[in-house]
Length: 419
Image 1 (cartoon, helix red, strand yellow):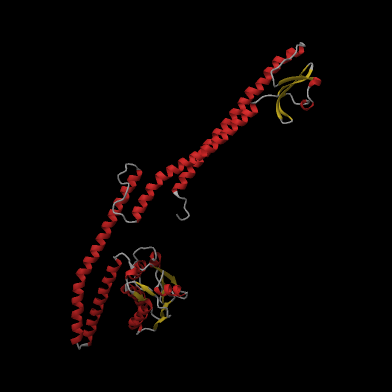
Image 2: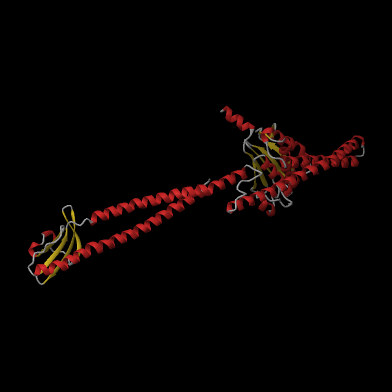
């Protein structure tokens, strides 16, 4: 899931860390307790033996100690135990660990030695047991974290999958916990979005239906006027009406296509290159009275499956507006391997339009290179429909450069298959 840590891993890590810290704290307490017990059992035992053995040894009575305990004085002290500091210390004799209480009185130094204490073995068993307990505690916490993560994340994943698939009825809506609240909120939001989309679709369909008939009447009437009109002024006016009605009808078709779900594979292949050359020829009249040259360069066919109306509208908006707002210089349409670029030598886009371009906002009307923000907004929507990117950059020395990059075209697919 990108570079983010999955929620299930976070829960598992949290439980494992909790088990580790809890077991670690408990182990520290056990270690302190074991050391305290050692002081109480071993050290106090040696002190008691000292109190019992010293008077008997001074009185000349034989010091008879239990197995494992020894009392030595003066020259009787083993060489390895001589010179020990007063108090209790640990020593070693071969493989055996000794607890030694060293002291001195008026009759000389003495030591009390615990040879046979099994406390070291008991201590080893205790530490081994708690090491196993520590591992079991961490593993149990990890297992519990995995179980809880599945119980929490699985419903969320189910809900996310249902939302992604566009299910009309979402799961978990009957639950009374936070997941149920989330599911009900998502369902309500989804229902509202569907209503908005339905209203937009119905509005687009109704408007197109209501406008198509009068536009057809206008187009037919102007055609009749053009056939029987000899007055140049009236003929020019009728021609403008005819062209405006034709553009409006084409705009309606474009809006209807954009309102539908994109299914590009169902359309016939269209040569964007041919569309671009045709639009360049069509708009030569816009630069006829200005020192502006409109050309199309490149021979890439840019064949892709798409509605021809959308391809024509995107290219026409860019070319038409570039011609209208370029007073001198050149408007160039460039056909690349998988992109189409329209560049001009006009004044460029105003800052108000640049700040909104590419952010999905409605572009504000502008007076500059490539005309109104409405035209650019339409081109952006068409590019989204065609799964293409729409890029803008300012040219050095003035002007604008707009590029439509197609994700995949029929021509590139054929070339890949040939290779």
